Length: 420
Image 1: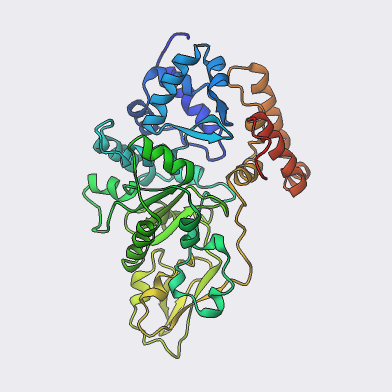
Image 2: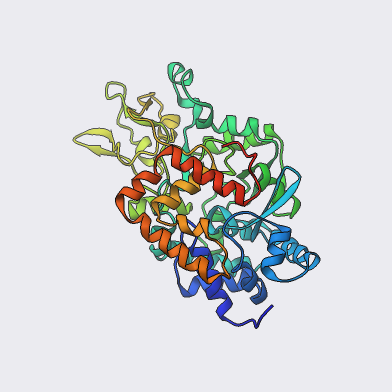
């Protein structure tokens, strides 16, 4: 297996940085990795391919027996550091990403596996006190997350036109499995003595991710009715529903507050439009009905509403279209309208990754993801260099070319029958 050294954590960092949402190299990140991964786990995970791989393939990469590989993978999935997904009777494994991944999973659990207070302090340093990680990880296009509009504030004519993927209620209804876990952001702030009094047991996961979290004791299974009730209660408290930026099978929907949520705080602090995609709707003020009470200004989670020349106005460039302002407006002067131009949302996670890989110039990382091969390393760097040439990037952004890339990726993962 090779000698294990402190360099393994640096190798793991480099492997994680190959993904479309790159990580930032800092002392606090290494300290986080040391708490979550043993030295041996860091070494092995640094060799995992970017694409989902079978037990047998990982066994070959690690050069250990299938039985030993299975034992190690069981430990890693149990920690929430590796994703486990079933496809047509076979199980595939992928190294988890930090946000919407192992950062959250490590604080969701309450079994004492990790020092959650120490992790919370490190997460605050890494995410909140320095913008380098936020600008790198959330600087990808398309954004990693999107806003769900609160359906109860939409007028009847808009409700009749709203698409199913725009509704958190639809995501809940079509999910085969739903789990709820501890809010990463509020729990992290609690250890720093800064948490608000909003509920923490409100982070919803769906599908295969939910099944893994339930099986590993990281989250608990709930019914559709319970999930609807959680969202309803969170809407009443002024929380924002933010989830995966995909139309089909989003893995998570969080119920976010403006005082603890890393996404909302970072959005306000940095002004990065790629942190979270707005909904297809935008707030407008009916000045004839507005009594200038200022409640909408107080409730807006991203400070997109303000007083100007004696009127309440909405900054259209900043509004997330969540509907919180309209939900609390007593005179119904706050109204949600459809945006003039629909916001682009990727069809599914694979399409989002392909688009991100093109925009981040990381396509080569997925085409040649053997971490032990020098030839693959050279080819990765060559392909990524080519994508920097504008005509090549433009060609890759054509849907027909993306479909070919997806077909190639799926074939590599033995998932040719996946519907793209």
